[in-house]
Every structure is written in C-alpha cells, then in structure tokens.
Length: 169
Image 1 (tube, rainbow, N blue to C red):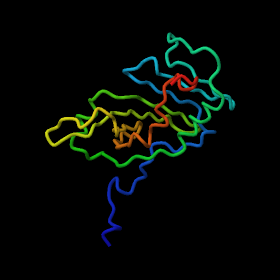
Image 2: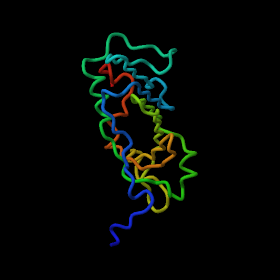
Image 3: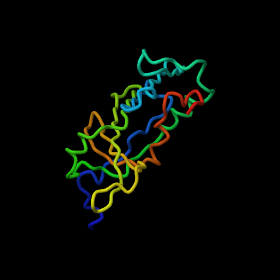
C-alpha cells in the first residue's frame, strides 16, 4: 500500500523539455558570464536561422554547418530532471545565486518556457568544493516557478554556444 501513497512532487513528470523539433518556433540561450556565446534560433516556415543574441555582436561569416541546426533542435526531444527541489530548505539562497545560463523556448501553440540553470557543486562535509567541474544544475522553470535538479550529462546537448553552429566550438 505504501508505494501507492505518493504525494506532492513525487507523482509529477520531471521533464524539462519534450518538444517535437518540427514544432519549435524559437530558442534563445544567454550565458551571463560569456556574452559572445549568446544566440537566438528562429524557425519560420520550416527555415531555421541562428544569429547572435545581441545585434551589436558580430555574426560569424558564412552559413551554419549543414545539419547543425537540425541536430540542435533534436536535442530538445526529451530532457528530464533528476528530482524536484521545491521543498529544498536552501531554495531562497539558490534563487539568489548567479545563473550559468537562461534558455527560452517557444513551441507552436504553447506558452513560452524559460529555464534558468544555476550550477551546484559537490562539496565535502566542511562545505569546500570537491571539484570545479559542474555535475548538476538547479533549474528554475518559468512560468511554473518549479525548482528541479538536472544532471549536466543529461542537459549538455543543448548547452551550445553560438559558434557551435559554425563548427568553431
């Protein structure tokens, strides 16, 4: 009987993105500490284009590599979180930390979704970091306001910079 007594976030789907690539209208990613890596990707009438997020940033010469945009869009097929962290006692502190990036996605017929990734590091008991390598992020979902824990290995496919589309990553 206990295994059926599920409450709160335990029964909810932990999927961040589950999007058919053909339904994506726009994606933008901004990396607050790396402004030259920001980009926006627009799909209009089946034609996709990628450009720097800010118009003052120079566009890379030439066209994106063949298939790079399609491969990137396919990365949004299904990305799930490890767990909900809505009841995390440190939630208020986590929400004040500097984000790694903001991902905004617009899907046909759906409300725009914005995910802010905040890095979290494994620590020793005394609070010192075990490593500077990011293994997980806290993901703040808007418009729901949910806080989730996401593994880097799961989400790394969408954490691409602007120059990725031109083979210069």
